[in-house]
Image 1 (cartoon, rainbow, N blue to C red):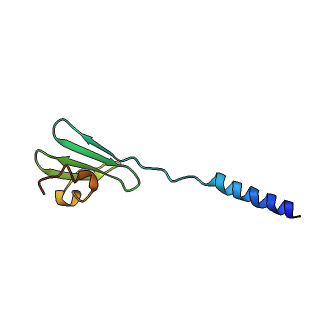
Image 2 (cartoon, rainbow, N blue to C red):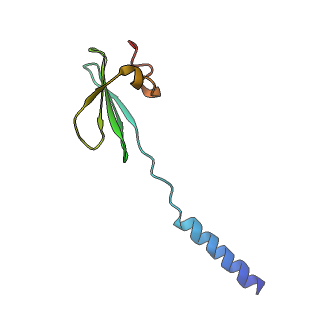
Image 3 (cartoon, one colour):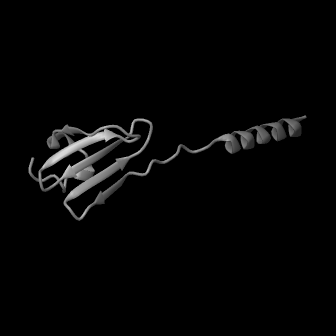
Length: 90
């Protein structure tokens, strides 16, 4: 009886471990263009694409899945660690 109980618990634990799937890791990429533009893709359900123009000193954001760009304050975008060394004028 005890052996049956231990076997049942072991199978239950194995089933729980096999049914667990780790959350998907989203890849954030920061790309530098030769014309002074930086683009950061932050994919996901609520992801955004950030664009920094280091020549004109302007910053933009748009939804990752499409849509128009909106200008945003570079001082706000500078709070993201990826842009601290890039946005030097704010």
